[in-house]
Image 1: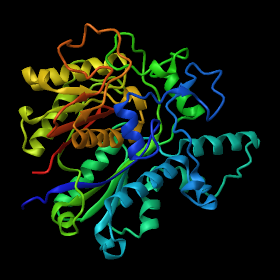
Image 2: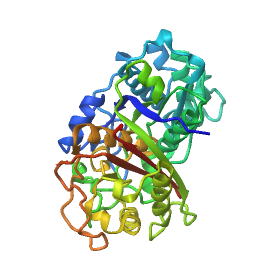
Image 3: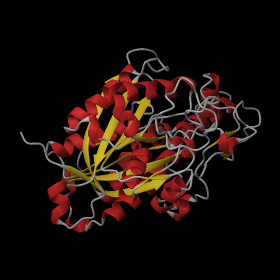
Length: 416
């Protein structure tokens, strides 16, 4: 069976450094930090008192007030980003075969804020079970694609992938394969997360996963720097329209890039820590290249998972060196998490978008906040430090890894 080609025809973003694609890209190329003191709740008693929140966002500018109250913030974000991507794709919605349009979405946690509030209300009510009837529908991680499909009447494949921070990358790979196999013509894919809550910050603090650089939030996410002390929690959403190539060409769609392949692997090592030599990370990049029918020499740029954790950045850089050999020094490598923070289940989506926009504009966004070289990371790697770099990118790779050892990698290339 000959696999169909799949292209990207629409993009949408709601991020800590920009509330749409244009603002997001401007923030990326200008090295804007999205980190600031937390405003969603009083964080004064927490070890970490800052995060990368979505800013200047008023949900009723996008969603009816009554409807918004029935949606957890992660689902609100999903609808806003997907609306932008669908509009960007330029569909004549009346001409789409909705039976062949799906929504495959990623979320690592789902409605954490809703869960927290309902349990607190139960406790404050002395154990009297008076739960909101929307508690479960607001909380469950699969509800976001449900709402997108209901709004537009899309009746194709519809589900959520949950693989911690690899969730939206997994969603993109599933979407790629459904279209490749002829099961759908168009799939809205991506991911959203809204975990900047007491439970989210407190839980990650308990794991010692978050930076505690409260005196300088804007510099706290510092991938590859020897003084990094953990990731910065982010929130938001990214959406991509994946479309079968002939379907897109027939309607004269703008095509951003071809999604050439996707790879998956497991570390099979530890619940939260990466394999120290980056074995799973090496394998997932290798699997992705094989799936795309490309070689290491074809790759120009890699948007690393690069969370700014002491172990993760070293393991991933070792994996790149092990797989790419001398060609590793020809790559532009970066971590956009230095600006956006870590959006958990939405990370893969917004970073894939960053890779696609880097190809389109010929500019690699920087890894900001780097001052001190880590002797455990190869100093000859071009980590695109502190300033964007011009680069003609024909093939771009994006890595996303999650707790539990889940690894996902997607590969984009300029259309032939």
